[in-house]
Length: 232
Length: 232
DNA sequence: ACCTGAACACCGTTCAAGT
DNA sequence: ACCTGAACACCGTTCAAGT
Image (cartoon, rainbow over all chains, first blue to last red; front, top):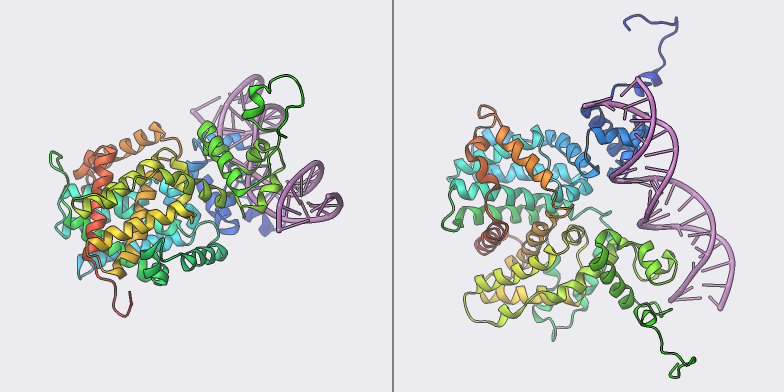
């Protein structure tokens, strides 16, 4: 394999799609990420991937129980891009925690449909564990009692994940317009408070709003004791 | 149509599946709810419903832009079962708000995959509006400033929705065991804080944990001012 | 406007058989 | 154990044509 068989250079296309390679979990995930970047998560299917890897769909079931698990593995891969630098930086722990969660949200925003599937099937790979460990460090630094940290971390990631997931489904501007129209059309006699708040219910640029949400939850996690009789 | 044509009684089966009825939005949603209760949300597809209604799938696109919108309409229907009685009851507003959100979560728990789709496609029907109005009333009673209420309501519903959505995908006990195994196997040198918390990360019966989460978020929404320069 | 059959372009997952 | 082709039982959505 170290000698070229023919006299000609290998054409580029050979390198780009190797004729056949041994199937591995890592290789499948790598192919999945490629397909996702090129064609979107919708196309990250067992069949599409099998085609990419020159095999039949059944082969992939050796490595992943189902499509949801495959997507979870793809997400873990992407989580490598989350910026954990704020963990060891200076400054207020709350702000640093907010920064880490904002970075997580931003990564998910690139593929909101992946976020949607993550609401159900959390990843369990190395990148996810690093993220959890980092957040726990910050909560500890902030003096959040361990019991609250245990439950709080799930909550924080859940909120961040579903914030990104909200934008799955094409970010359909028609759907948003429809919601705005419904709110505007609401009868003040039937729904006085909705009518009173009106547009403000939908106000706020995405980032402002989601960072406020994260801050609110951090504050709540810090301030809310766990029910009695539970150990931490 | 008021006279029987034949001498025999109409067989029961005629009543149960009328030969043909005019297509209406309501009728489609009703059929969708039936199919969901009988066969699960997975089967609430354009094709399956078309079969149920004795027509072709294309007919349904007159009433729903796509399958996600259909599911949102089904959810709104189900939301009629949310118990809003606590709104006008006596007692602490926080506890009553928690009760309303718990009822919402409970309704979604019956069809977690519907909750999963609701993370992306919020309903906009009458039942959803009633729920929003009720929560706003409680936040107002609790003295939550309008700006925080506007943003907070979304957050509260989002958290409750994604809490139920987490259980979509079959509640696969194997997946949970896998996560537990990963956490147990974690090396204390690499992930000291995860190792230290250990089982507690997964502890807590569902209801205890999710009601703590709701309480934490309510507290956070109450305590966290919106950024300056924003009106309420 | 509402309704439809047919078509296009796909899916997930399991099975029995091979190595 | 890993790998595979083939099969089973489905999907969403659009189109052109009808009323």
